[in-house]
Image: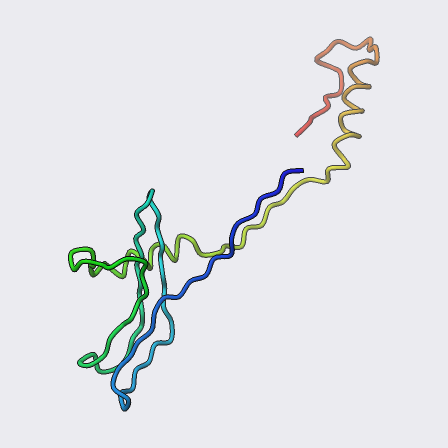
Length: 128
């Protein structure tokens, strides 16, 4: 028996903080996390509402970031990825699998049975 065990993944995308009397709202955040070898890129999109003059977004990271490592990206890219990876309802129609053995038996029996009629006058058995 082969087993696979992965450690539990824990994540925390950060938080907003401001003065005590500030009113900050964020209904939803989207996060895209990409790994390439030992490099990790995290993209975040928030629907932040409030006065952005005196607030901070705190995001815990494992190393100290340099200013050139922080970029403002295009929200359309995250929206495209969200639409591409959204669940979809797909419906497939398959024939009754119990009918196939009976059909194959009829084909086998008709091929094995001798017939005095020429081939172009014999009844045809269609499959699929």
